[in-house]
Length: 117
Image: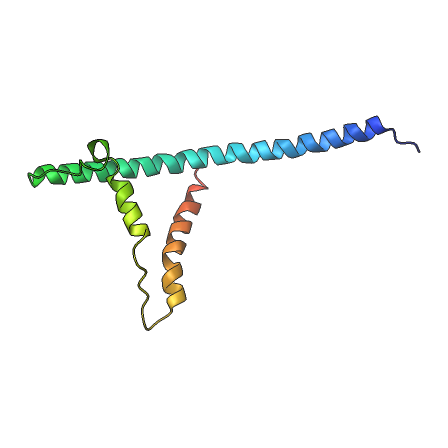
């Protein structure tokens, strides 16, 4: 049986098209998930900004207005501060579990978003 090179090229092109369809399918699955996570993140930032502004108005003081326009970058400054804080581990108990605990909570919440779309 003789296999011509055009047939081999056709077979190879078919396989590459099928693999591209899978890649495009995965990309289109991730778009709603990332959109949802981005929307929730922006919503939380707006809620935190409103809470700071409203509590400042109730206490008759100036709110967070020095970090960016209208204080929008205050949440970014707070996140950066928390990121660079010193880690304090307990002297007794399981330090590995103490370190992994917050990651377990965040990963389980983010995995629950994958079911929604």
